[in-house]
View 1: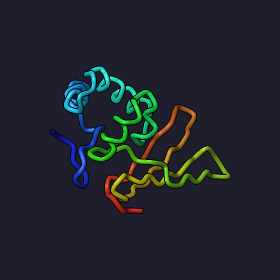
View 2 (view 1 turned 180 degrees about the vertical axis):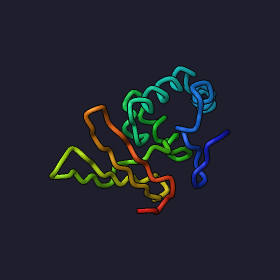
View 3 (view 1 turned 120 degrees about the vertical axis):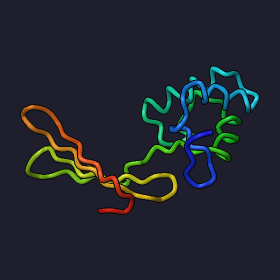
View 4 (view 1 turned 90 degrees about the vertical axis):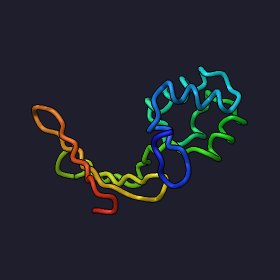
Length: 118
């Protein structure tokens, strides 16, 4: 399977079909994979927050997998405009920064592409 950070399978690196196969490999209905996919698409940053999944399945899944979705560790809002600077933390502890800036024509998101670069 694709998508490895540490030794756990990274769910965000899997396709919907791969998530269906993964769910079935745990003895769950394949449509549980669809639930995982939807939870990830709606911003679930950890397996425990996927409340649509049975608790026992979440526990088994959490032992072998991680979402791979970063959590917002810190958000700093500018007092001058709508700019927000974020510090995201990945499940392995790595961090990246991003800045969301608003303009008349829309918004721009700048994301650091180097882990630990701040």
